[in-house]
Length: 386
Image (tube, rainbow, N blue to C red; front, side, top):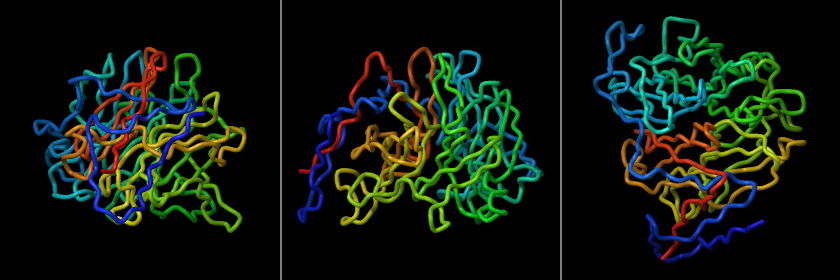
């Protein structure tokens, strides 16, 4: 297996980070997906649309529901097309996390050209989820589908107090049934009000379909932001977090000082059971302090990594990339709400023998990158310290 050479970053000199086409080549090991190539001249594929109006059942007035930002997308295949469900923010306030988020829907025959639906498909309403969703909204979906065609969405509810990982289901991707917090029933409600997000349900490619699969007889979901944890389920709605020997949440991977994921390790799109193991693509955030961060990347930048778990012991790490396979490179990935740079991966769809990765650009727009297993590429080049 190819080994990555990690440059020493614990130096006491002033350094500059080089972006763009320059930098070290980034060959990926055989177990990893990628590289993902950005199609020339098409990104971003979804941008804010100030003209979209929606009669908000909470505000009792029309709102520009996707006026300010459109980002952090999920993706799924249905009827030979890719559907992208993206987080959209209105213009009700200024600042990250201060507006109301709703989830919009777009569809594409080629994975690039998007036809957007005029109204959001998941949003705060006068329903049983109101206490969890208002007035922050519905955020950051990840979507996977069962063999019988039930789409399962793991998304974040945000009431401006606590973020909770919640579950919704649909047969058509347009009409969703909300089931509430994913951990509400486990351990007599111990984790019902715990701050949590980012659920990645394990899937498997069966023929040309990426479907939810069981691992050791149960459905499995990796989840978490500050560390990646796990949970199991019998019904895909009620989830039971995995605990360690001290009866605390078991942490499978955590941030690493001096690496691109030194601040956060946050789950990306649905994990995939492959011949090599269970592959999880995740978002890594760089710390902002010079002693703790990877100085080859901007302080606070979000880059994407990969980790491989043992299929027989899905809580055991086999391999983990030491450098990101995907990082902020384009101008639209380093501007917008999050100027430190963000490629926040959440959507992965398999169509026509290729993998389409959908990601949020600087918390403001949606873009796509494509991995063709028949013509594998290297990962994004790694900046060098000069």
